[in-house]
Length: 196
Image 1 (cartoon, helix red, strand yellow):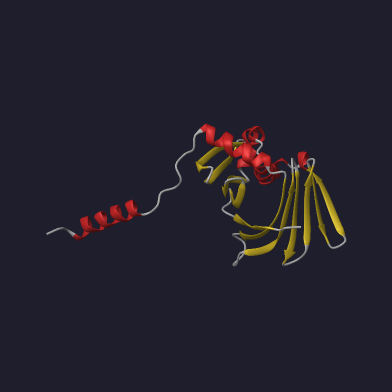
Image 2: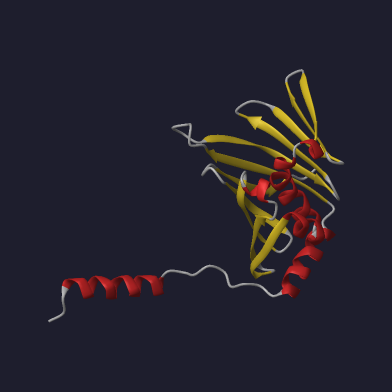
């Protein structure tokens, strides 16, 4: 007769075997191939939804809108709900417009923003050198379904962002998850392409 404790251990072991494991680590060649495919995409215009979990709030913040990308370094985030706002990154300058007010920030003056912005910009551009300057980069899976794990190299940046996890298929990003060092996190889910 088996003991109840050993039965629980056996069930847990079987359950662990049945659960899908993470994607396998990719080869350096797979990362090169992914970066080439991403770099070949010169423009994107997609919908998005974003959910931010902040420790100071009881409920997550949700927003949605459109993302536009023009290679190599122009990103635009048009927030449509809950409140219209436009954020534009171009040539190292970030501008935020809400209503009739616009604020402009040179990214060089705010190095803690670099991991948040460069993770998306450099990935979309297929700019491996830029990614590896800012992050320790690990690719899992293959070109058909991949996960890019980015951990900031700079200790000061790592005090703000612990990891950025980007998933996708081929040259299309699907999600961008930002894990902040204080436990806050956001998940950006990229929707379908908007045709002109």
